[in-house]
Image 1 (cartoon, rainbow, N blue to C red):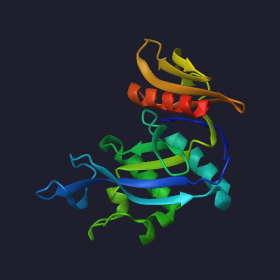
Image 2: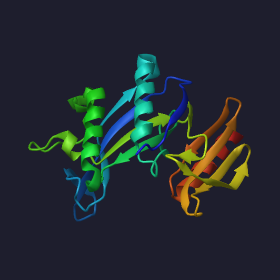
Image 3: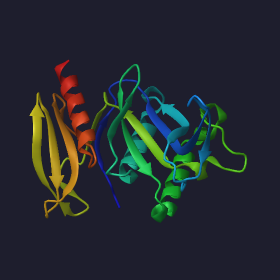
Length: 231
């Protein structure tokens, strides 16, 4: 099922696109409850601590076309309910993350996308980009629980500008608005919650950022853009 559609992309600086393969990790603690060791566990393990298996950065100055094709592809396959989210920041800027999470009922499709990412970026398997110890009897691709593609908030990215997705019609209700930033809730024809969207009006036009179905994430994203617009 098609999730999101990238409408427009403008890379306004040379901050990198960050591609990560994430896995499940079990932590071992000593008597003082300090972490002394960690190791990767299988996708279906009940434990749910996540860590980055491997990660690379792709800079606009190196390959704008590949960044564009990667975002076009990953917007199309990522989990709409999880993407994009404002997940983390570097010393330079904040990042929005697109996620594709493993589910046992869609294991075949997920594996295809893991293979696709590795084929696009074989350097994900290079030792200098692998951040965790890989068991000798395992392959990285079989340990990936989540794919993450993160882009700088400084880039101009537009997606799903209308309220029609996969033939579904949505009602939009504005919950909050301040300094050109609005928080909307989208519901289906039966008024059942579908997702939250933060819309930002700038001199370059209107930009929409999906926040999934978590109100706390939506409010945090809304507040962050309000603070940014006030600077």
